[in-house]
Image (cartoon, rainbow, N blue to C red; front, side):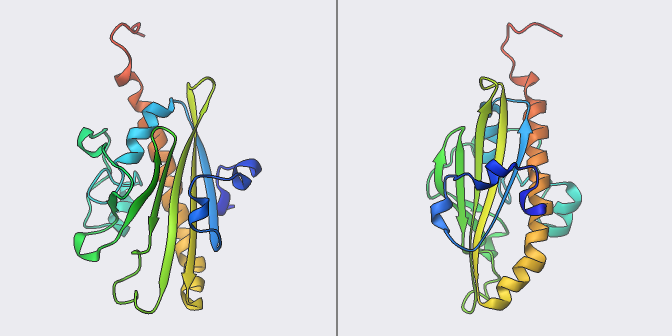
Length: 203
Protein backbone atom coordinates (compact mmCIF):
# COMPACT_ATOMS: atom_id res chain seq x y z
CA UNK A 1 0.00 0.00 0.00
CA UNK A 2 2.66 2.52 0.92
CA UNK A 3 4.67 1.66 -2.21
CA UNK A 4 1.85 2.98 -4.40
CA UNK A 5 0.03 5.52 -2.25
CA UNK A 6 -2.43 7.54 -4.34
CA UNK A 7 -1.43 5.87 -7.63
CA UNK A 8 -3.65 3.81 -9.92
CA UNK A 9 -2.65 0.48 -11.47
CA UNK A 10 -2.02 2.27 -14.76
CA UNK A 11 0.22 4.87 -13.10
CA UNK A 12 2.25 2.22 -11.30
CA UNK A 13 2.90 0.31 -14.53
CA UNK A 14 3.45 3.23 -16.91
CA UNK A 15 6.94 4.24 -17.98
CA UNK A 16 8.34 7.55 -16.77
CA UNK A 17 11.39 9.65 -17.61
CA UNK A 18 14.45 8.36 -15.77
CA UNK A 19 13.31 4.73 -15.54
CA UNK A 20 16.26 3.74 -17.70
CA UNK A 21 18.79 5.14 -15.20
CA UNK A 22 18.13 2.38 -12.67
CA UNK A 23 16.40 -0.48 -14.50
CA UNK A 24 16.55 -3.00 -11.63
CA UNK A 25 16.20 -2.91 -7.86
CA UNK A 26 13.31 -1.44 -5.93
CA UNK A 27 10.67 1.00 -7.12
CA UNK A 28 7.75 2.94 -5.67
CA UNK A 29 5.19 5.13 -7.44
CA UNK A 30 2.91 7.61 -5.70
CA UNK A 31 0.57 10.29 -7.00
CA UNK A 32 -1.77 13.10 -6.06
CA UNK A 33 -4.21 15.41 -7.84
CA UNK A 34 -3.66 19.17 -7.69
CA UNK A 35 -6.30 21.81 -8.44
CA UNK A 36 -3.84 24.03 -10.29
CA UNK A 37 -2.11 24.04 -13.70
CA UNK A 38 1.35 22.54 -14.11
CA UNK A 39 2.82 26.04 -14.48
CA UNK A 40 1.81 26.75 -10.87
CA UNK A 41 3.23 23.44 -9.59
CA UNK A 42 6.58 23.48 -11.37
CA UNK A 43 8.26 26.37 -9.45
CA UNK A 44 7.82 24.45 -6.18
CA UNK A 45 9.63 21.42 -7.60
CA UNK A 46 12.72 23.16 -8.98
CA UNK A 47 13.46 25.01 -5.73
CA UNK A 48 13.41 21.92 -3.50
CA UNK A 49 16.48 20.87 -1.52
CA UNK A 50 18.33 21.25 1.76
CA UNK A 51 19.11 24.92 2.36
CA UNK A 52 16.87 25.78 -0.59
CA UNK A 53 13.08 25.53 -0.50
CA UNK A 54 13.10 22.38 1.62
CA UNK A 55 11.09 19.25 0.83
CA UNK A 56 7.66 20.60 1.95
CA UNK A 57 7.36 18.02 4.70
CA UNK A 58 5.69 18.74 8.03
CA UNK A 59 7.73 20.73 10.51
CA UNK A 60 7.99 17.79 12.93
CA UNK A 61 9.58 15.71 10.16
CA UNK A 62 12.01 18.54 9.38
CA UNK A 63 12.99 18.77 13.05
CA UNK A 64 13.36 14.99 13.40
CA UNK A 65 15.32 14.24 10.21
CA UNK A 66 16.86 17.60 9.28
CA UNK A 67 17.39 19.46 12.57
CA UNK A 68 20.08 21.71 11.09
CA UNK A 69 17.78 22.84 8.28
CA UNK A 70 15.06 25.42 8.53
CA UNK A 71 11.37 24.95 7.73
CA UNK A 72 10.22 24.43 4.16
CA UNK A 73 9.36 27.67 2.41
CA UNK A 74 5.82 28.80 1.70
CA UNK A 75 6.74 31.04 -1.22
CA UNK A 76 8.23 30.73 -4.68
CA UNK A 77 11.84 31.98 -4.58
CA UNK A 78 12.90 33.48 -7.94
CA UNK A 79 16.64 33.00 -7.39
CA UNK A 80 16.15 29.22 -6.97
CA UNK A 81 14.27 28.70 -10.23
CA UNK A 82 17.28 28.38 -12.54
CA UNK A 83 18.40 24.75 -12.54
CA UNK A 84 19.67 22.61 -15.41
CA UNK A 85 21.17 19.21 -16.15
CA UNK A 86 24.10 18.71 -13.78
CA UNK A 87 22.79 21.04 -11.06
CA UNK A 88 23.58 19.71 -7.58
CA UNK A 89 20.58 19.74 -5.21
CA UNK A 90 21.84 19.51 -1.61
CA UNK A 91 20.20 17.07 0.79
CA UNK A 92 22.34 17.80 3.83
CA UNK A 93 24.98 20.17 5.20
CA UNK A 94 27.93 20.84 2.86
CA UNK A 95 30.35 18.63 4.81
CA UNK A 96 28.21 15.55 4.13
CA UNK A 97 28.54 15.96 0.34
CA UNK A 98 25.01 14.52 0.22
CA UNK A 99 22.68 15.53 -2.57
CA UNK A 100 21.10 14.78 -5.91
CA UNK A 101 22.11 15.63 -9.46
CA UNK A 102 19.64 16.84 -12.07
CA UNK A 103 19.75 14.17 -14.81
CA UNK A 104 16.79 15.22 -16.94
CA UNK A 105 14.59 18.29 -16.98
CA UNK A 106 11.57 19.20 -19.07
CA UNK A 107 10.05 22.45 -17.75
CA UNK A 108 6.53 22.11 -16.39
CA UNK A 109 6.60 18.42 -17.26
CA UNK A 110 9.36 16.28 -15.70
CA UNK A 111 12.32 16.50 -13.33
CA UNK A 112 14.69 13.56 -12.78
CA UNK A 113 17.19 13.55 -9.90
CA UNK A 114 19.81 10.90 -9.10
CA UNK A 115 22.11 10.27 -6.14
CA UNK A 116 24.85 7.91 -5.02
CA UNK A 117 25.87 10.08 -2.07
CA UNK A 118 23.18 9.30 0.49
CA UNK A 119 25.27 6.96 2.61
CA UNK A 120 27.56 8.15 5.42
CA UNK A 121 30.99 8.90 4.00
CA UNK A 122 32.52 6.13 6.15
CA UNK A 123 30.23 3.56 4.47
CA UNK A 124 30.83 4.50 0.87
CA UNK A 125 33.95 2.34 0.43
CA UNK A 126 32.01 -0.76 1.46
CA UNK A 127 28.41 -0.18 0.28
CA UNK A 128 26.52 1.51 -2.54
CA UNK A 129 23.14 3.15 -2.84
CA UNK A 130 22.16 4.34 -6.31
CA UNK A 131 18.71 5.89 -6.51
CA UNK A 132 16.56 8.33 -8.42
CA UNK A 133 13.65 10.61 -7.73
CA UNK A 134 11.33 11.37 -10.63
CA UNK A 135 8.64 14.06 -10.62
CA UNK A 136 6.15 14.09 -13.50
CA UNK A 137 3.33 16.59 -14.04
CA UNK A 138 0.41 15.47 -16.23
CA UNK A 139 -2.14 18.16 -17.23
CA UNK A 140 -5.84 17.34 -16.76
CA UNK A 141 -9.04 19.14 -17.80
CA UNK A 142 -7.38 21.21 -20.53
CA UNK A 143 -4.54 22.11 -18.20
CA UNK A 144 -6.65 23.47 -15.36
CA UNK A 145 -5.67 20.60 -13.05
CA UNK A 146 -2.52 18.51 -12.68
CA UNK A 147 -1.71 14.93 -11.78
CA UNK A 148 1.56 14.93 -9.81
CA UNK A 149 3.46 11.63 -10.06
CA UNK A 150 6.44 10.71 -7.92
CA UNK A 151 8.61 7.67 -8.56
CA UNK A 152 11.67 6.46 -6.66
CA UNK A 153 13.97 3.70 -7.95
CA UNK A 154 17.06 2.31 -6.24
CA UNK A 155 19.68 -0.42 -6.07
CA UNK A 156 21.74 -1.29 -3.00
CA UNK A 157 24.74 -3.44 -2.21
CA UNK A 158 25.67 -5.50 -0.17
CA UNK A 159 22.78 -7.60 1.12
CA UNK A 160 22.68 -6.09 4.59
CA UNK A 161 22.13 -2.61 3.17
CA UNK A 162 19.30 -3.95 1.02
CA UNK A 163 17.70 -5.46 4.13
CA UNK A 164 18.09 -2.27 6.15
CA UNK A 165 16.66 -0.27 3.27
CA UNK A 166 13.53 -2.38 2.91
CA UNK A 167 12.89 -2.49 6.66
CA UNK A 168 13.65 1.12 7.51
CA UNK A 169 14.35 3.45 4.61
CA UNK A 170 11.38 2.54 2.41
CA UNK A 171 8.75 3.14 5.17
CA UNK A 172 10.47 6.40 6.16
CA UNK A 173 10.55 7.45 2.52
CA UNK A 174 6.80 6.83 2.35
CA UNK A 175 6.13 9.23 5.23
CA UNK A 176 8.36 11.89 3.68
CA UNK A 177 7.18 11.57 0.08
CA UNK A 178 3.49 11.52 1.02
CA UNK A 179 4.04 14.68 3.03
CA UNK A 180 5.97 16.20 0.13
CA UNK A 181 3.14 15.46 -2.33
CA UNK A 182 0.63 17.03 0.02
CA UNK A 183 2.93 19.97 0.72
CA UNK A 184 3.35 20.74 -2.98
CA UNK A 185 -0.41 20.47 -3.51
CA UNK A 186 -1.17 22.85 -0.64
CA UNK A 187 1.32 25.44 -1.86
CA UNK A 188 0.38 25.26 -5.54
CA UNK A 189 -3.35 25.52 -4.82
CA UNK A 190 -2.86 28.37 -2.36
CA UNK A 191 -0.68 30.23 -4.87
CA UNK A 192 -3.37 30.36 -7.56
CA UNK A 193 -5.17 33.52 -6.39
CA UNK A 194 -1.85 35.37 -6.12
CA UNK A 195 -1.06 34.57 -9.75
CA UNK A 196 -4.42 35.68 -11.16
CA UNK A 197 -4.22 38.28 -13.94
CA UNK A 198 -4.77 41.90 -13.01
CA UNK A 199 -8.14 42.03 -14.77
CA UNK A 200 -9.46 38.86 -13.06
CA UNK A 201 -12.90 39.37 -11.44
CA UNK A 202 -12.91 39.83 -7.70
CA UNK A 203 -14.72 37.06 -5.81
